[in-house]
Amino acid sequence: MSKDPGRVLIFDTTLRDGEQSPGASLNLEEKLAIAQQLARLGVDVIEAGFPFASQGDFAAVKRIAEQVGATEGPIICGLARASHNDIKACAEAIAPAQRKRIHTFIATSDIHLEHKLRKSRDDVLAIVPEMVSYARSLVEDVEFSCEDAGRSDHEFLYEVIESAISAGATTINIPDTVGYATPSEFGSLIKGINENVPNINEAIISVHGHNDLGLAVANFLEAVKNGARQLECTVNGIGERAGNASLEELVMALHVRRQYFNPFFSRPSGSPTPLTAVRTEEITKTSRLVSNLTGMVVQPNKAIVGANAFAHESGIHQDGVLKNPLTYEIVDARTVGLSDNRISLGKLSGRSAVRARLEELGYDLNREDLNEAFTRFKELADRKRDITDRDLEAIVSEQVQQPEARFQLRLVQVTCGNSLKPTATVTLADQDGHEETSVALGTGPVDAVCQALNSLAEEPNELVEFAVKSVTEGIDAMGEVTIRLRREGKLYSGHSADTDVVVAAAQAFVNALNRLVAGKASQQLHPQRDVVLTENRPTL
Ligand code: KIV
Ligand code: ZN
Image (spheres, rainbow, N blue to C red):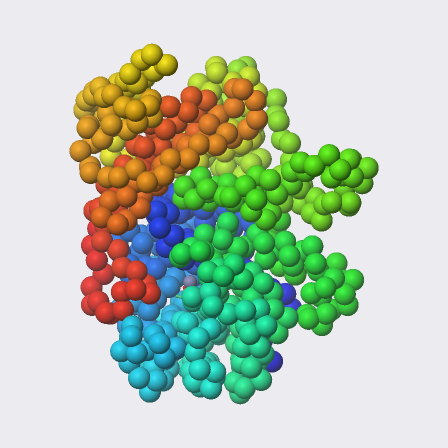
């Protein structure tokens, strides 16, 4: 049996695999904010990025290692293909962290070997020990992944895993890269590894999986029953294609059904000891932060973090819940940090009250950021009577999007109505503070705003998504707008909230434009698609 830490380790890959979602790219400040929140959430490992991908990725992993990994917190991990250059860059980026891990991988399925790597099984069997021992010469903690393990020949997989462990791998990760496995197949795969790899007791078995058939979480739970003790997942389940296994669903399944899972950990079924180290009350906040910063909207019916996850619509259900919540609720909303936290902040609240509430919410802002948040709070309080935690979170998360801004929105004004041609006037400032104004007509006010902004920015793009939802309830609620722009096949998202949805749309559009400009300037490698092992890291 593989090494057993006695509970499940949560390996969060929101900042690496999650960021591989189309349009979800994050800037350095945003990555840092998410990493800090993941540390508060209590994950065991943060996969902070793929350092060899670009100078920007390298800098982000290094900064997270310095700022989040400096204290006794999560292990900071970086991804590296099985090549010297990738592994070296990874080791340099994670160096400042107290607890650090290199995660290196190579594909093991015949389909990947033949069509992607153009290598033989023998080639892979030669590369694995060489690269794992190189990684081990740089750090103590090395994870090795057999990419596309879900479709790999089992006997070959056992051989590769044995050689990786002999070379020093401390965690062996089994990815269902294309989300093909069914729960019982995936469970048997883990069982087979436990039974057939002679040195498996020297490593922890981890699983990683995509949600192409909607089975990722179910597959992981079967894997846990068969001895997997690390789960690789993302907040809100974001990631390549249909996404990764979702952190909140896994953690809450292990929390709510602890009695069922306890015996698989050789515990009495009634043992109250949690199966993960995650602070469940931080889940909702983490989900919102990730959604706001990546622009990946959470579907309303998403388990645990969807807007409707705790809403009871039918009269019969409402009646039952009022009599006894156990009739229709298996999770108390407060367990995941969801409460009706209407707070007494308003027009007359001072800076210290706002700072105190932000601190309670987990936002420890420096003086400058606090000043900016307070100014935005005051502007909002002029238009909205009660400011809720959700409003404060919307203000703060938007601030994080600003630092690398090429364009600043200075003015937006629209005229529209049933007998008027929608017209927008907008003013943008560049990085030197130079302002330009443009006026445009559109099919509606938002279209007019986008036309005017495009004529100033001169950055060709196609608007592919425009979504509005309200942050809280009531007529004075803030509207959250998410915009996605496409350029040369790549997506760039922008997000903003305001009591005026047209203003929110304008700001979201500018945020997306800023990402597009930054993305255009950075050449980025994809860890799985770019298989030619480049000698040099692309420059920003
Ligand atoms: O899906 C996958 O196989 C991966 C590996 C790099 C772990 O993301
Ligand atoms: Zn993946």
